[in-house]
Image (tube, rainbow, N blue to C red; front, side, top):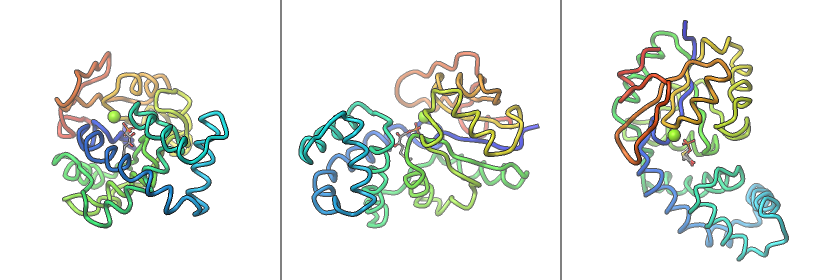
Length: 225
Ligand SMILES: CSCCC(=O)C(=O)COP(=O)(O)O
Ligand SMILES: [Mg+2]
């Protein structure tokens, strides 16, 4: 019997267009000024140094910013990039420039699952900080109390089986009692290879989703935990 549900964000709880047309452009616009204003803050300096290492060399700040902007364009899921994006989005959420988008079924069904005793988790390429900001600032209010924990690429990439094995180990549950929700076939394949149950969300937005062998749901109402 399912004891825990782990959900992806983009394309699963939240629309692709919110991430691609609101969050990413906001971070791209803010980045140069953010690096100038906050580049000496220890946490920012640390992320910039990590990004510089990933870029493979001694880039000055202007070239590093250009590299980070290119990575955003290419939707790279690099940890330091996702960390920097989260720090920039924080101001946007706090100032009310945007709210975290979640589909209307999401808060309602998450509450039902919680009432049935299921533990709920998030696994996204966005940093844990970015995840809590998104769920903390929705038009349905603060949804963070519904979740028991959050995972980002600190546990590994979302297309790697080992990441799901680590998550299951952390949840201290048999893999077969954990259900993973995502809109990306390669993520579902990796989770299934680690023994998790899977459901593919097909929200009808963006490019066609290939569910492969995974059960399909059009919203959280269709998911049978
Ligand atoms: C945490 S909100 C922003 C989502 C994000 O940055 C991203 O790259 C989407 O990744 P996901 O794993 O949720 O598809
Ligand atoms: Mg997704």
